[in-house]
Length: 409
Image (cartoon, rainbow, N blue to C red; front, side, top):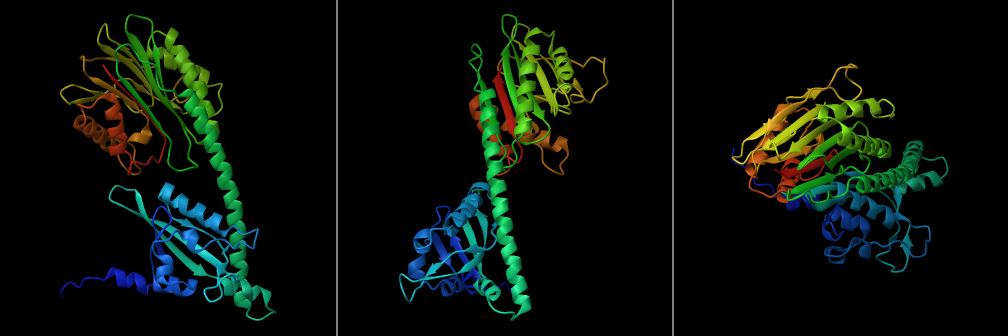
């Protein structure tokens, strides 16, 4: 049977529901026939025009909020790339036959993204169901019981949406506070001698998913020695960010006086016992010594740092791994290992948000990191950091917080 080309433009126009396509700037790119018919507008009145120029709020209704609610939903889709289903909305429409006269209308919209090849949202699908008759059924005498019940369900959905919106605003505020706290505690590092360092902290894209990842760099006693650490507190939100701040400061102080990374992590483990929410935190501490050209390291359940050699080979520092904080036997020293490096090699420390994927073996994730490092081995630390975020995060978007430190040795 010969293949038959599908005329998707015709399919779009024939869709039984009201559907429009919007640009990320909320300008109409297209609308199907049902959308135009139900809204009482012609194609010339809609296509190429800004959404809220075509359908503004009723100026005679000071309580009108349909435009604000719809804009918030559409902008969320653009920012998150996720579908957003709105509950019942009252959104009055100006009569096409009698300009200046506004008709009371109720709608149930669903907004969804269309992504381009780079993963960015290029169009929005705006699908609308008019439910005005259902709402009016409530106002009539006994009549159709099923219609009245359906109208009640739509009304309850509207109330739930309002509660959800308040929760969303509360979570968004918490996220802003947490990000401000993280930014204050994770500043760009001061220059470390002549060594080139790049750091990145990329919060999760999900507005409700602020976590407790951190990084730290500190000058150690000696001619040319520094300590570099990354860590990850279990949990989300402001509480995790606060725990992160305590542990980062404690490890930074311990690394200044401890006899090596393992001893610094031992001290951190003791301190973590007195901090609620610190259990099962992972961290890795390294000491880079340019006098001996060695990296000494110890890991508390954290993913292994990567050493990118000048020839493009990658070695993972996995020879001194122990359980996370609070998950190991007491009075047992943590392991410590040392690895030689050559001038021009690159040390990379990171948290799991950079590489891990659900339902994927960790060796596959580490292999993908090694391939990316080899591919970009000639890049400066700053360019390498940007390349890793672009290559390894899904469509450039973080589903978990990501901390990254890169230093040219």
